[in-house]
Amino acid sequence: MKKRLLLVAALAMVSTCIFGCGASDSQKGNSDKTYKVGIVQYVDDASLNQIQDAIQTELDGKGKELGVTFDYEDYTFNGQADQSTLNQIMADLVADEVDIIIPIATPTAVVAQAATEENQIPVVFAAVSDPEAAGLVKSMDAPGANITGVSDALNTEAILKLIVAADSDVKKLGLLYDKSQDSSKNPVKEAKEFCEKNGIEVVEKTGTTNDEISLAADALAAANVDAVFTPTDNTVMTAELAIYEKFTKAKIPHYCGADSFALNGAFCGYGVNYEELGTQTAQMAIEVLTENKKPGEMAVKTLDNGIATVNTETAEAIGLEYSAFKDLCEELKETKTAKEFE
Image 1 (cartoon, rainbow, N blue to C red):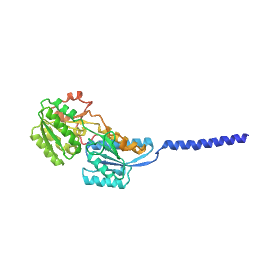
Image 2: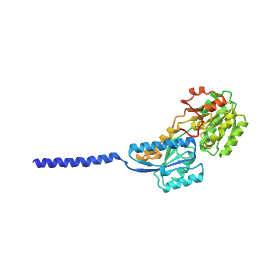
Image 3: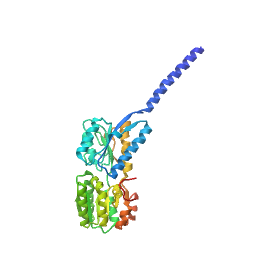
Image 4: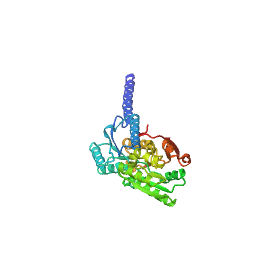
């Protein structure tokens, strides 16, 4: 009888070990798995660099927490604003059979969408100002297909109200942007409508290269505009360090759709927190990879607009007071001219 009881006890211990080990493995889930993550940046500028850094930081942190590896080191590229380069990068990522692609900025997302139409590799974009207008999603709530992401849509009226708050006598507003950038189209349209309603003359100058943007800035200064507005435009962003002194010398405040413009010398950048945007983009990508969520069923995320960043050096140089901004935005930050965020 005693031997029988010992045998039963032993069997119970073996059973406990077997099922206990099974439960432990189940809890590990995707532990020790490696995911290949393609990250493609449109061009080298402070905003997009900040987004990419935030994405990689979040992937590293969550990877350790989940016990998995998000391998982006071998699959991170910069398209340098060149269409053929972007196409080649996407083709290479598809050939490498990456598990997901994270395109940063609208032009990059459009190329990623085209490259994954047949293979349906998941795409989670970052910093696409108007996903519907760009033809990336069917709707913000239900993107469809294999794509979703985080938008940096700009509240155009809010930034134009900052312009009027700083100078109630604004009579002539310059618009500086790249007409080929999808992210600029709707904000420019909204700016024109605002100016028409408020009796403000519009002077419109565009360019598609750094040299053209520089010439456009000269033309706006020569036109004696009272202020200049640029939306979330990557072409102007890359040129800002080269043009901000033109506006500063002419005592013209440059208002733009991202804080990185102010970092690079513009008077004021208004918009979303790009570090947070990058973090949320990475979080969505992680959910797709580790929780088997379908991008097409994940609503596009938008962040609250409301952070105004003023370059104090530029503000002093042009002699413009900006304390009224505190009552017109969620947060007022100050910065000084630098190439990159610290």
